[in-house]
Length: 190
Image (cartoon, rainbow, N blue to C red; front, side, top):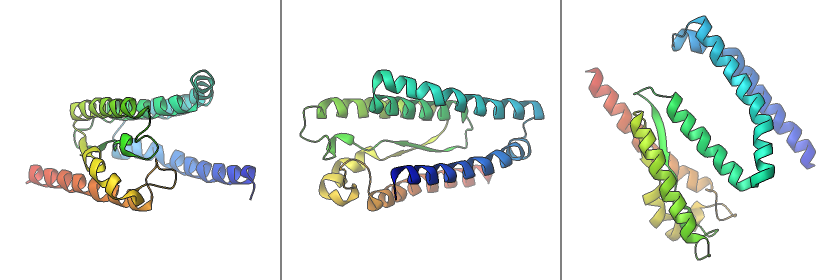
Protein backbone atom coordinates (compact mmCIF):
# COMPACT_ATOMS: atom_id res chain seq x y z
CA UNK A 1 0.00 0.00 0.00
CA UNK A 2 1.41 3.38 -0.96
CA UNK A 3 1.81 6.26 1.50
CA UNK A 4 -0.74 8.26 -0.48
CA UNK A 5 -3.35 5.50 -0.24
CA UNK A 6 -2.69 5.13 3.47
CA UNK A 7 -2.98 8.92 3.97
CA UNK A 8 -6.30 9.00 2.09
CA UNK A 9 -7.67 6.11 4.18
CA UNK A 10 -6.52 7.76 7.41
CA UNK A 11 -8.13 11.05 6.37
CA UNK A 12 -11.40 9.25 5.54
CA UNK A 13 -11.40 7.71 9.04
CA UNK A 14 -10.64 11.04 10.68
CA UNK A 15 -13.32 12.84 8.69
CA UNK A 16 -15.88 10.15 9.54
CA UNK A 17 -15.18 10.79 13.21
CA UNK A 18 -15.38 14.56 12.76
CA UNK A 19 -18.70 14.32 10.92
CA UNK A 20 -20.23 12.08 13.58
CA UNK A 21 -18.98 14.28 16.42
CA UNK A 22 -20.05 17.41 14.55
CA UNK A 23 -23.59 16.07 14.29
CA UNK A 24 -23.74 15.12 17.97
CA UNK A 25 -21.96 18.16 19.40
CA UNK A 26 -24.91 20.58 19.43
CA UNK A 27 -27.05 18.13 21.42
CA UNK A 28 -24.22 17.49 23.85
CA UNK A 29 -23.68 21.20 24.40
CA UNK A 30 -27.34 22.05 24.91
CA UNK A 31 -28.71 18.90 26.58
CA UNK A 32 -25.79 17.84 28.77
CA UNK A 33 -23.83 21.05 29.37
CA UNK A 34 -27.03 23.15 29.36
CA UNK A 35 -25.66 25.86 27.07
CA UNK A 36 -28.10 28.21 25.40
CA UNK A 37 -28.46 27.92 21.61
CA UNK A 38 -26.41 31.12 21.23
CA UNK A 39 -23.59 29.76 23.39
CA UNK A 40 -23.69 26.49 21.51
CA UNK A 41 -23.36 28.42 18.25
CA UNK A 42 -20.30 30.26 19.53
CA UNK A 43 -18.64 27.00 20.61
CA UNK A 44 -19.26 25.23 17.30
CA UNK A 45 -18.17 28.31 15.33
CA UNK A 46 -14.99 28.56 17.40
CA UNK A 47 -14.18 24.93 16.64
CA UNK A 48 -14.53 25.53 12.92
CA UNK A 49 -12.56 28.77 13.03
CA UNK A 50 -9.81 27.19 15.14
CA UNK A 51 -9.53 24.28 12.72
CA UNK A 52 -9.30 26.68 9.76
CA UNK A 53 -6.60 28.81 11.39
CA UNK A 54 -4.72 25.70 12.55
CA UNK A 55 -4.57 24.32 9.00
CA UNK A 56 -2.57 27.36 7.95
CA UNK A 57 -0.91 28.44 11.19
CA UNK A 58 0.69 25.16 12.28
CA UNK A 59 2.37 24.41 8.91
CA UNK A 60 3.59 28.03 8.76
CA UNK A 61 5.12 27.76 12.22
CA UNK A 62 6.59 24.39 11.26
CA UNK A 63 8.30 25.99 8.25
CA UNK A 64 9.96 28.52 10.57
CA UNK A 65 10.74 26.41 13.66
CA UNK A 66 10.84 22.85 12.36
CA UNK A 67 8.57 19.85 12.89
CA UNK A 68 9.55 18.76 16.39
CA UNK A 69 9.40 22.17 18.14
CA UNK A 70 6.08 22.85 16.43
CA UNK A 71 4.67 19.48 17.53
CA UNK A 72 5.79 20.15 21.11
CA UNK A 73 4.30 23.66 21.04
CA UNK A 74 1.03 22.33 19.61
CA UNK A 75 0.85 19.66 22.33
CA UNK A 76 1.57 22.18 25.08
CA UNK A 77 -0.97 24.58 23.61
CA UNK A 78 -3.62 21.86 23.44
CA UNK A 79 -2.91 20.75 27.02
CA UNK A 80 -3.05 24.30 28.38
CA UNK A 81 -6.23 25.10 26.41
CA UNK A 82 -7.85 21.93 27.68
CA UNK A 83 -6.97 22.84 31.25
CA UNK A 84 -8.23 26.40 30.84
CA UNK A 85 -11.49 25.58 29.11
CA UNK A 86 -12.23 22.44 31.09
CA UNK A 87 -12.56 24.28 34.38
CA UNK A 88 -15.09 21.78 35.69
CA UNK A 89 -13.99 20.92 39.23
CA UNK A 90 -15.09 17.30 38.69
CA UNK A 91 -12.70 16.78 35.81
CA UNK A 92 -10.28 13.94 35.39
CA UNK A 93 -7.57 13.67 32.84
CA UNK A 94 -4.34 15.40 33.81
CA UNK A 95 -1.16 13.38 33.82
CA UNK A 96 2.47 14.36 33.87
CA UNK A 97 4.70 13.20 31.05
CA UNK A 98 7.03 10.26 31.63
CA UNK A 99 10.76 10.94 32.03
CA UNK A 100 11.93 11.35 28.45
CA UNK A 101 15.59 11.52 29.52
CA UNK A 102 15.63 7.81 30.47
CA UNK A 103 14.53 6.70 27.01
CA UNK A 104 17.18 5.31 24.62
CA UNK A 105 16.56 8.26 22.32
CA UNK A 106 18.01 10.70 24.89
CA UNK A 107 19.77 8.71 27.64
CA UNK A 108 23.55 9.13 27.49
CA UNK A 109 23.38 11.72 24.73
CA UNK A 110 24.52 15.31 24.86
CA UNK A 111 20.95 16.68 24.96
CA UNK A 112 19.91 14.44 27.91
CA UNK A 113 20.24 17.20 30.58
CA UNK A 114 18.23 19.68 28.48
CA UNK A 115 15.51 17.11 27.81
CA UNK A 116 15.40 16.21 31.50
CA UNK A 117 15.06 19.87 32.51
CA UNK A 118 12.37 20.58 29.90
CA UNK A 119 10.38 17.52 30.98
CA UNK A 120 10.50 18.59 34.63
CA UNK A 121 9.53 22.18 33.73
CA UNK A 122 6.67 21.02 31.50
CA UNK A 123 5.35 18.65 34.15
CA UNK A 124 5.52 21.38 36.81
CA UNK A 125 3.55 23.80 34.61
CA UNK A 126 0.99 21.14 33.72
CA UNK A 127 0.57 20.16 37.37
CA UNK A 128 0.11 23.79 38.46
CA UNK A 129 -2.58 24.35 35.85
CA UNK A 130 -4.29 21.04 36.56
CA UNK A 131 -4.49 21.79 40.27
CA UNK A 132 -5.70 25.31 39.56
CA UNK A 133 -8.68 23.91 37.69
CA UNK A 134 -9.32 20.91 39.92
CA UNK A 135 -8.15 18.32 37.40
CA UNK A 136 -6.87 15.01 38.77
CA UNK A 137 -3.13 14.62 38.19
CA UNK A 138 -1.58 11.19 37.65
CA UNK A 139 2.20 10.95 37.85
CA UNK A 140 3.78 8.96 35.02
CA UNK A 141 7.15 10.64 35.57
CA UNK A 142 8.32 8.99 38.81
CA UNK A 143 7.36 5.42 37.83
CA UNK A 144 9.03 5.85 34.42
CA UNK A 145 12.37 6.73 36.01
CA UNK A 146 12.74 3.20 37.39
CA UNK A 147 10.47 1.16 35.16
CA UNK A 148 11.76 2.18 31.71
CA UNK A 149 15.45 1.39 32.42
CA UNK A 150 14.46 -1.99 33.94
CA UNK A 151 11.82 -2.83 31.31
CA UNK A 152 12.89 -1.54 27.88
CA UNK A 153 9.90 -3.42 26.38
CA UNK A 154 7.71 -0.58 27.71
CA UNK A 155 8.98 1.47 24.75
CA UNK A 156 8.38 0.95 21.04
CA UNK A 157 11.21 0.13 18.64
CA UNK A 158 11.94 3.85 18.16
CA UNK A 159 13.09 4.01 21.80
CA UNK A 160 10.85 6.98 22.48
CA UNK A 161 7.14 6.21 22.21
CA UNK A 162 5.38 3.72 24.51
CA UNK A 163 4.86 0.20 23.20
CA UNK A 164 1.59 -1.70 23.68
CA UNK A 165 2.96 -2.83 27.06
CA UNK A 166 3.91 0.77 27.86
CA UNK A 167 0.39 2.01 27.10
CA UNK A 168 -1.02 -0.82 29.21
CA UNK A 169 1.18 0.33 32.10
CA UNK A 170 -0.02 3.93 31.60
CA UNK A 171 -3.60 2.65 31.73
CA UNK A 172 -2.87 0.93 35.07
CA UNK A 173 -1.40 4.14 36.49
CA UNK A 174 -4.24 6.27 35.12
CA UNK A 175 -6.82 3.88 36.55
CA UNK A 176 -5.52 4.64 40.05
CA UNK A 177 -6.36 8.30 39.39
CA UNK A 178 -9.79 7.38 38.04
CA UNK A 179 -10.53 5.32 41.15
CA UNK A 180 -9.32 8.19 43.33
CA UNK A 181 -11.64 10.62 41.51
CA UNK A 182 -14.59 8.21 41.63
CA UNK A 183 -14.04 7.75 45.35
CA UNK A 184 -13.86 11.53 45.78
CA UNK A 185 -17.16 11.98 43.95
CA UNK A 186 -18.85 9.16 45.89
CA UNK A 187 -17.77 10.59 49.24
CA UNK A 188 -18.98 14.06 48.21
CA UNK A 189 -22.37 12.69 47.07
CA UNK A 190 -23.04 10.95 50.38
